[in-house]
Length: 68
Image 1 (cartoon, rainbow, N blue to C red):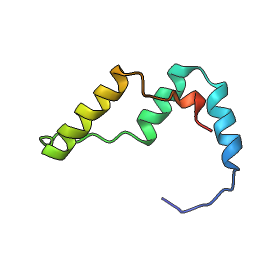
Image 2 (cartoon, rainbow, N blue to C red; image 1 turned 45 degrees about the vertical axis):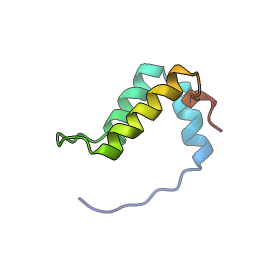
Image 3 (cartoon, one colour; image 1 turned 90 degrees about the vertical axis):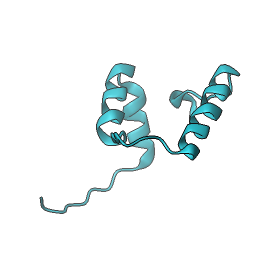
């Protein structure tokens, strides 16, 4: 694959993502960000998941739409 560069202001990318239906944004994030690893979770990863679930249950989360 040939390397190429484009320059797009971050604000335009955010505006584009906010304008898309939520389902499409999740599909994009899954393609771009999510990586799959079938190895067992480390103790650190298990602890991070527990902390994240606790924060979620306590309402301590920010929807991506509200990130500036």
